[in-house]
Length: 285
Image (cartoon, rainbow, N blue to C red):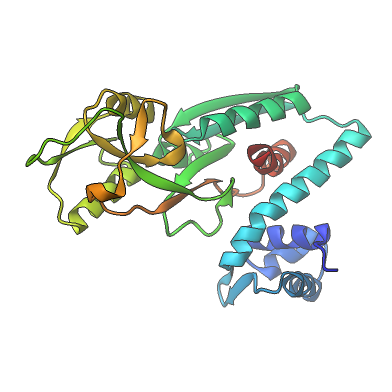
């Protein structure tokens, strides 16, 4: 019976993060041919190609991206088990920036699991818009960044859980005014989700007006709950006071989004590497 080998999963992770088999080989203390053989064995095991090779390097296929999420979780759990048995605990300070479209229950679960396993880790969490998370991460203002991505997904995004749908959200008692433009509730114009929602409305030829602009998702949720109009948000951001607009209302279909960790900017400290490996399993648990 076929089974996944941790060593091969580590190789896949390293190759994707390094961008090529050549760059990954010294990190794995293997020859390039040995790295290639490990990837081939893994592809034979899953029955699908995992990497797209070109002169500029490699990118994961759709199956490769799917397996990467599982690989990071499995490797992270294996590393944690070894540290636990050896009595080694993580310690130090780490800054995490996360999109305000985050999944509240999943974030709380993830932070609780990390705190329970590694109480000596001091985690500073900032909740920002995705564009602000990316900017803060690029400028070195945080150690790890979690964003919500629209298709086409960033190939090297370290995914956290499955994709989830976007929905048109409204207050439970809200109904549109006949003959009037659709009142759209949104974040500022720099928000990728607002840009996407407006483009979908224009593509379908629907008349709309931005009736309310919130500074963050919490304000957007309040505006929806107050019955000020309709907003495009991820399904897990719905609260008890909201509900999706029914398909028969004639609004355009929406895509799915993906939450994930931004890829490493370069060499990372041991603490950041270890927490990066642990977060996917804690998020999914």
